[in-house]
Length: 266
Image (cartoon, rainbow, N blue to C red; front, side, top):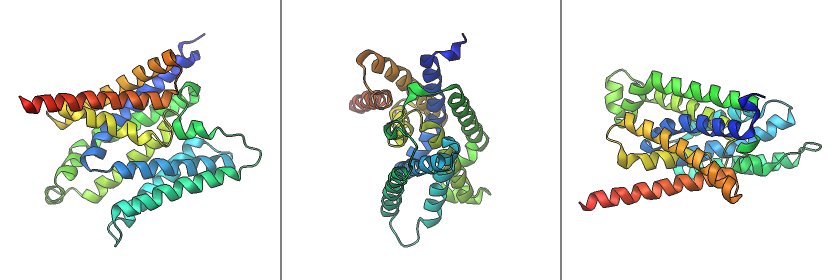
């Protein structure tokens, strides 16, 4: 019997893998105020799951392709006469509704829809684990490679342009990374909670960070803490694991906000 034969070990490694990738990427989502962008991309992944099951292909591949298509569509349609919040609202809810309708047409296919909406980390297999860590490594490698350009384009697009950095190209790179994280995380926390794991650890890390790099590292650490602690609480109190992980992350954010308030009074 190997270590990976234990479902708890696989679940722990899966949670840590998603947290490591989502933490640094979530910092860019927070800095760029892209929270609803993440929601829209995540909601679209349900349509990818339905299409993957319909064509008997990999759920990860289906979620990745549809999430990527949604992210690119939002990028292309933004700023063309319609408010960004309206555009995101329309696309996010339309994609989710289309996904749920598509699932209802899958005759003869048994699907646990709740597992894809809220995640089922305890059911992560060895193949899922390999996909999660490969995706996390790809996202971290991409962020490390483009870190300075992404940061400059995020903080000051005009300065980035003057320095020979194309802000649109950097935004597209972030879009690719976001779609990849959504695809690998759907098994862990589900389509409805992925953006929470992106945003909450990053927001909780902000008061403790003095540089962008420290915020990225702290965000990954807090995400990992939420994943491990959430699994432990879920086991102790027999609660749904994915939502418990997000609830603990929210608790960390509350503590962080309290700390920031106390520091401002001094």
